[in-house]
Length: 346
Image (cartoon, rainbow, N blue to C red):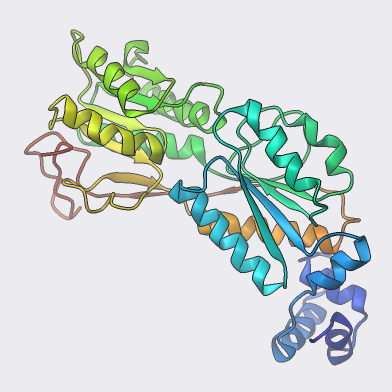
C-alpha cells in the first residue's frame, strides 16, 4: 500500500506537507500543491485509515447516525459516506435513532462507546450538548441540521432559500392560498423551510394564514385530518408546500382519500416514484450523496489532522426540479418553460 511518505518522496516535500495538501490546507503554495497532487495521482495514494486509527487507539471504523435508514435522503447520505470510507479502508457502523429526540442520545453513545474513529450525525433534537465530552476525543460532523450550544463542523442545505423558491414557484402558477405541511417546530429543517415560505408570501404582499399551516405529525391520518380542516374552511388552499419527502409521500394518499385532484403540490426533497406519479411531483431537490461525500471528507480530514481546531459550517445549494404537480387544473405554463401543469391526481 502506498504511504504518505512515498508521496512525499515522489513530490520532494515532507510528509507533513502531504498531509496539509490532503486536508486542503490553504497555506500551501500552488506549485507545491500541484506536485503533491500529481504524486498522489501517479501513486494512487489513499489515506491509510488503519494506520491512523492504530496510532490513536481507535477502531478502523466511523459511525453514522440518521433518523431512519429507509428514508431515501438519509439512505443517499449513508451510501456516499460508505463509498468514501471504503476508499480509505474504513468500515461504517450505521445506527437509526428514530424521530424522537429522547431516543437519540442512547443510540449515538452506543456507537461512540465502540471507540469509532469519528462520527457523522443527522441530529433529531436541537440540543446536542451531551456530545461535548465525546467531542474532546472523537471528531464529529453534523449533517442536514445545525445544532445549538455546540460548536461543531456542520454541513447543511439551504433550507430557507429552498422554502422561498418552492413558494415562489407556486405563486408563479397563480396560487395565492398556499398551505404549509411539515413536522413540529422542534424539527430545525421544518422551521427553516417554514421561514422561507413566510418570507416568500410576505414578499408577494400576501398574509401568512395560521389556518393554512400544519406543524405536527406527518403520517397520512394526521395529514388527512389537517387537510380536511383546511379544505372545509371558507378560503381553502389551492396548493400545498410539503416540507420533506416523508410528508409528501404521506400526502399523496391523503389527497386521494379526500378525492381532491385539484390541489397543486410541491415537496422539499425528492423520492423514488415522485417522477412516476400522475402528475409527477415537483420538488426542491437535496443532493444527499453530495452532502454525505462532503461530510465524510470533512470527517476524515479531522481524523487525519486532529490538531486543527477551526470548525466550519457549510451550506450546500438546493435546486428546483419542475414536473407537473404545481398548477391548477387545465393550466399551461407560458411557452418555452416545457412543463404541463395539473393538479395532483389529475
